[in-house]
Image 1 (cartoon, rainbow, N blue to C red):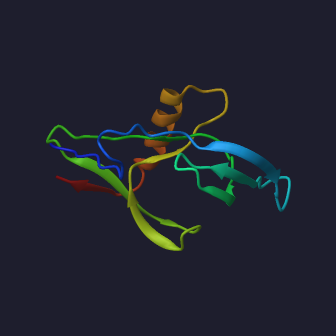
Image 2: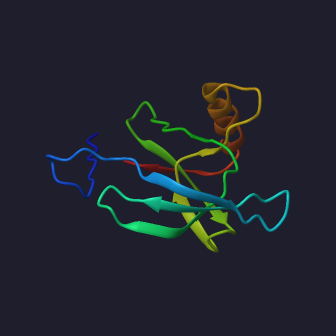
Length: 118
């Protein structure tokens, strides 16, 4: 099995972090946090409307069968309004390690019908 990773950078440049210039809480309610950031990119451009929701860490599993098949799950994602094919995973559970959360999510996903890709 062969995987390639591509990124839109020159081979001679390192990926650089963005610089946070301003952070504003624009949450519509206490149970759904939303932050608005103003950031400076490595090339000097400033983006003043970068929104994200810090809901927590996620875990994903890359299950490979004895026959070198990658197991993916197909499920409806309401936030995107689409049925997606993706790696099994979910939110990291409180008071558990990343590995423990990944294993718990994998056990839950095993109830779904897996897709085998080789």
